[in-house]
Each structure stands twice: as C-alpha cells, then as structure tokens.
Amino acid sequence: MDSSFAELKKHIRSIPDWPKKGVVFRDISTLMADKLIFRKVIDVFVYRYLQAEIDAVVAIDARGFIIGAPLAYLLNTSFVPVRKKDKLPGDTIGRAYSLEYGEAEVEIHTDALQKGERVLLVDDLIATGGTMLAAAQLIEQLGAKIFEATAIIDLPDIGGSAKLRSAGVSVHTFCEFEGD
Image (cartoon, rainbow, N blue to C red):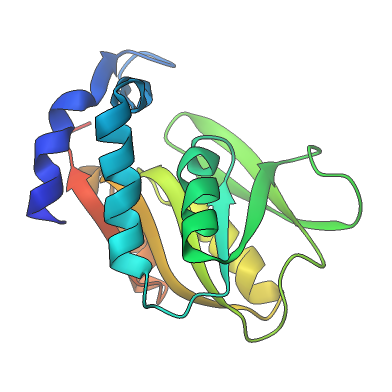
C-alpha cells in the first residue's frame, strides 16, 4: 500500500449492509466526484506504471473501467474490457467465480490479447479476489502475462489479495480498509 495515497481514504464512502446485510460497500463514486482527487488517483496509477513496458490494460466491469480506460490512454497501451457474462459480442471465453455476496461469471474476447503481451489488470477494489483471479486466468488462457494486478482499495481481511499472490499474481493497491 502506498502511504501517500492513504489520505484519499476519506473520499471513499462506506455503505453498510449493501448490497446485502453484513457487507460494507466501499464506494469510489465520492472519490471520483472531486475532480482534483480523481485526477490524483489516475496520476498515481500512471506514475507507478509509466515505465513498466505494459502492452495492455485489462480492466474489470464496471468500476475497473473508470480507472482502466484513462490509464490505458495515458500509458499509450490498448484497453481490454473483462465484462460480465453475455455483455460482449463475438467469440469469448469465460470463467465463473465466487464473490463476497454471490456468484458471477466474467468473459473476455478470444482475440483481445496476443501471446506474450504484458498486461496490467485493473479494478477498483480487491475483496475476495474472485473477480480478479477469474480475469487473471482468462488472461493467462489467452497466452498473455500479468505484469501486476492493481486496485485503489484492498480489503485484506477478506483475503483476496493473499489469494491472488498465492496464485502467483503480483498485487499492488493504494489503500486498504480493515474489517468487513
């Protein structure tokens, strides 16, 4: 975690019991509502990855797109969406996963990445790690290599970042929230 980013935690709204009882949702819409803070968030990502020789930014539906698209543009890479099941036209591959409040499946186009490409995997938050791990498996299935998985927020008590690391994925987040 980057301590210079910790100050931005105050711009992330915590919503208890959403989307179901017992879950505390970490909402980045309040962070994005402040144009200077949102710009700082994107700038911090760009600064970290500017010299990383990344070929593509792969972002996860939907909040990952908010970070991933401007990041890909500023890093001069391609942008590849990983979407929820049945949202991409054309040939796709998919992977089911569990998350903190249910189950889901994500997909990627079969021609989205080339073998050997270096990929930055982006989302807003890592909780159970299920979504990122599923996306990482899809990336690897296409023959690309994950440079790093990154997010604004880590919820380390839920264990997702540890699950990703144990699967061999390098992980970087900029702030974390303890507890549920």
